[in-house]
Amino acid sequence: MHAGQLDAGLAGAQSVTQGYNGTGKFVGNKKDKVRIIANLYPEDMHLVLSKGLTLKSLKDLNGKRIGVAAAGSGTQVSVRMILKHYGIKARESELNLGQSTQRLADGQLDAFFYAGGTPFAALIQLGSTKGFNLYKFSESERKEINKIIPYYVESNIPAGTYENITTDTPTVAVNGQLVTSIDQPADLVYGITKALWSKKTRSLLDKGHAKGKAIRLETALKGVLIPLHPGAERFYKEVGMIK
Image (cartoon, rainbow, N blue to C red):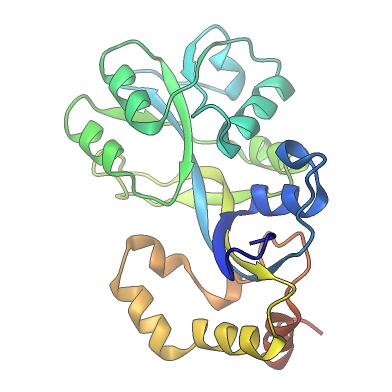
């Protein structure tokens, strides 16, 4: 998009924020043309535990065999920041979601981290076979993680998202965001933003994927850490969300 090959796209707040500021994996490769249209939905952090394993705090991961997400992924970068902050020394494996669930099922992992839009099909299957637990982040852990990784905000995985998890799971999430380039016309982006938050779109979102219900106007600016596109900003001013 920065190179003009895309007009708009979906990206995690972590990549968006780092790209705009030229930090993290974008050091020396700043993408400061990117602008926000809307925050969409939380990509919830799952700390998946083998069935029967319970943790009193994140520090109990010390010495455990854990999956830290795929190499080079934004999730892995964040997970390693969390582990470092809490002084956790674990036996780490770089794995995608499918590999992580398989190794947990085979008894080769004690736990793994993964972030994304719930529910994960791989976890639904794991829950119906070997089973698993989800770690409930404490309020203090969620606040602490937000301090060290500002684009991770408090979230919750509702009871029943996975059939075997019958209580709510407090967690953190990085938001999926709709982004565009500052080069796009303001009138066009205004029209897109207005259409996104129309009654017709609301109806379509409610009938689609479970995460569609989480895409709501009242959270459109949650976790936005870089500038809005002027066209989007115009819409949010009209509806009284910003001055």
